[in-house]
Image (cartoon, rainbow over all chains, first blue to last red; front, side, top):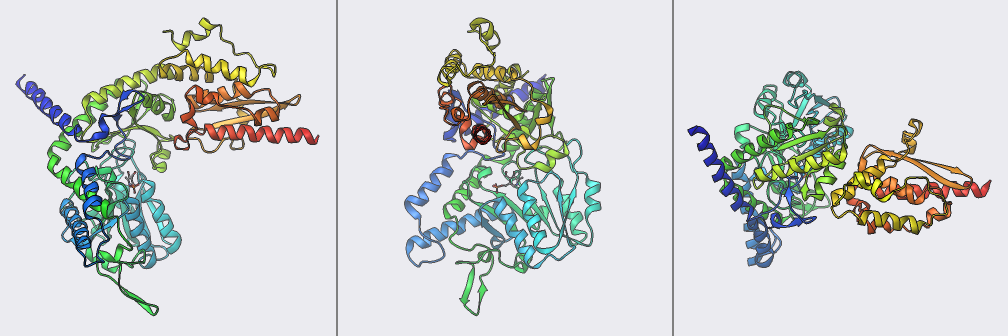
Length: 419
Length: 163
Ligand SMILES: Cc1ncc(COP(=O)(O)O)c(C=O)c1O
C-alpha cells in the first residue's frame, strides 16, 4: 500500500517535471491536422529545446566567422566556441583526450570515415568485418563499399526471435582474420540494447577493434567510451536534441593516428605542395574544409541540456514510457510487437494484424500522432522476421504517459477502420 | 453523422462499371461530393478504404514484378487491357489506403480512350484532400500510379493506331 502510493507520488513528480521540460520545446505545442502533436518519431530525429535553438541563433548573430583561420577577434571567438564544443563532447562521452573527438556530419558520415580510411590501407583481401543482422543500413553499406575496394568480406551475426543478438554466434564469428567488429549499441528498429561492453572485451581478447554505432544510445543512457573500451563510437547530434548535419566520431588516438585521412582539403593539412602534402594532427586530420561550426556549438548546447536534465530522470521516465507502451499495445489481440529483448529501450515496433504499416501510420498521422512506418533502414532484420516493415513509436524525454494513451486510442480507431 | 459503412445504403451509391458516357468531370465531381459528406478525416479514409475493398480482384498472374509500380512504400500492381479501343485497369495493393487511391483513379479513368486518360484532369484529388499523397515525400506513389496509368494509356492507344 505504502509502496504503491509512494510510486504514485513519484509518478506525479515525474509528470510535473515532464510538463516543465515540454514547455522548453517550442514545436511540441503546435497542432497537426487540428490535433495536438504527439511526436513519437524520436528515433528518426528528436525535437530541439530553446537552449539549442537560441545557442545557434546567438552564434550566427554574435559570433560567426570561420574557425582556425583568422587572427581577428571574431575568428578567435568562433574557434574558441567550436573547440569548447569539442571539450563538451569529450566530457559527455568520457573520452580521455579532446583530439579523439572528430566532428562529422552524423553517424553515417562517421562510419564512412572509418570504413573508407580502413579500406585505403588497413584491409586486405580475405580480411573479415563482423556486423550484426540488426544494423542500420549506414552500418552495412559503407562496409560493403570498403569490401569492394579491399576484397575483405562481411560476416553477419544473427538475431534471435526476441530481437537479442545470438551471442554464441558472435563469439564464433570472431577469427584471426577479423579486422573490425561494427555493431549498434541500440537497435533503431527493435530497441534491443546490445551487450557492447562484453562484445568489446571478447573482441579485444583477439586484438580486434570495435566500432559502436551509438546513434540510438547517447540520448537515452549515459555512455562512457573509456569504460566500454570502445575503439570507435559514432553518433548524430539530431537524435539527441541537437541540430542536424553534425555528429561525432570518437576514436582511440592510436588507431586514428594509423588511419589515412578520408577527405582532403583545407584545415586538415600541415603543408601542401605539388610534391606532396603533410597532414595536420588529430583531430584536424579528419576534419577537411570549413566544419559545421554552428552545428558543433548547438550539439554542445544539447549535451549541456541532457546533462542538466540528468540521466537518472531520463532513464526512469523513458523506462516508464516503454513499459506503459508495451502494456497498452499488448491489450490489442491482433497486435504483434517486433523486438521484445529483455534489454530494450525507447522503441516499440509493431504490426497490427496483417495491415500495412503505411496504413496505420497514415491514419495515426490524421490524429496528430507522428510514428514511423517502413523498414527503418534495417531491411536485413526485417527480412529476418519475414516482414517488409513495422510501425514504430519511439520515445524521448519529453513524451508523456498521456501521449501513449492517445496512441493506443488512435490505434483502436485505426483497427476499427482497417479490420 | 453516419459512418462510411452505411454510406452506400444511404446515398444509393453505385459501383457499377462506368461507361464512357460518364464525363470525367462528372465522375470526379461525384467523388468530390461524396468525400465532402464526411467531416472527419478518418471517416474519409474509411470511405476510401471501402472503395478499395470494392475493386475487382486482380488476377494472381498479374501480381508480378512486370506489373508492379515502383516508387511506392506499399506494393502496387496495375494491369491494363484494351477492349474495343477503350482502356481498362485492374489493380491491387497490400496497403489499403493505396488501394483506395488506385480505386479512385480507376473509377475516373476506366473504360476511356488513351487520349482521354492522358489528358484527364485529376484535380479532384486536390479537392478531396488526397493531394498530400502526391507529395514525393509521402512516398505513397499516387503520382507514380498516375504516371503508370498514363503510360499504359499511351502505349495501348499507339498500339491501336498502328493496327
Ligand atoms: C542505429 C542507427 N545508426 C545510424 C543511423 C544514421 O544516422 P544519421 O542519418 O544521422 O547519419 C541511424 C539513424 O537513423 C540509426 O538509427
